[in-house]
Image 1 (spheres, rainbow, N blue to C red):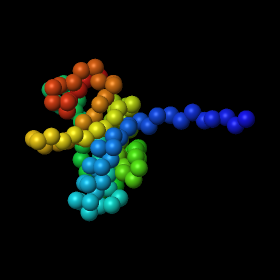
Image 2 (image 1 turned 90 degrees about the horizontal axis):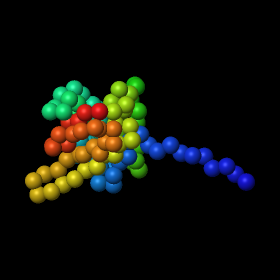
Image 3 (image 1 turned 90 degrees about the vertical axis):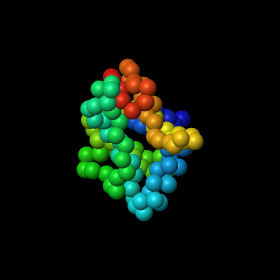
Length: 117
């Protein structure tokens, strides 16, 4: 009988909508190896906030989260705040954006961009 290895969940899950949006950004920036950079910075109305930018490549110490053919780059310090989270993308008539669903956040502001742990 073969033993089954238990796979740890990814440190950051990406929704299908987020994967599609990252693909669109790669095409629009004409950077096929690029991805998103997710960082946590001080600020916002709750103390910390998410910063999401397009990046051409990972930095030396980044963790690279992959889903299908897309990548998200997360530095080790930011990873401590978002581990176990999911990244989604939404659109409505007024626009759209990425949203982090973070189980580590004790509270978040109404805009969903800043949080406390």
